Length: 305
Image 1 (cartoon, rainbow, N blue to C red):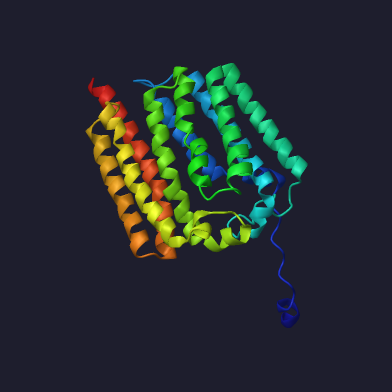
Image 2 (tube, rainbow, N blue to C red):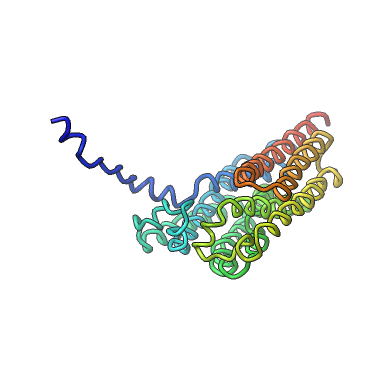
């Protein structure tokens, strides 16, 4: 009896629910960082707390449109995702959701988000968000990503927009401070993604995407990561130089920037996959702590005044 039981094939893991499958299309962890950066832009746009109505509606609208862009990305890249271990689990790559279901889901999310932004925030934020959607879902995903190894650099403009969207949601305009936040994320994006591409190089080779480690080699990519960390540190000083922040933020920018540069230097001179993973994980921590420091400094400055 025992022998018969032990030889039985293991039960297959239950398929995720339909809700879980659609939720996975929205790339929750990526969208969480997008929404976090947008909220930072909202909070930095005014001396005190922003008006709750445009802030709440703006957060929801940006979340919906970002989720729609993520779902559209899964639709376009389903064949590529199926070849990569990192993305093969996605419902579109596994064939759990059809193209029609995915496209309909993306359109519903995007339409709801655009309506929310137009009716409850302001038209400027709606159009900026729509432009961000087109930039990521179409220009980056469809055109740039399969065409050039500089896809991450050029496409990074869309990923750098969230704080600008948040700023516009509560101010109804885009000021120089918002553009500084944009530049920080724009220069943060290449070392963040290239660190990932370095230790996932085999995945990208199988996918056929022209990522920099595949087209120009790992050594040049590692040098690029290091050089971008230097440029990133210089750009993160702009809020202090402009008078947008104080000494607390400056200390955080110098400390975090120096730490990132150290990672970039080690990655360039003494590479390992584990170090590339550490660099990728630290890059997320770097951006989160940098913006948190900017926010704390912002409210300390307002309190002192």
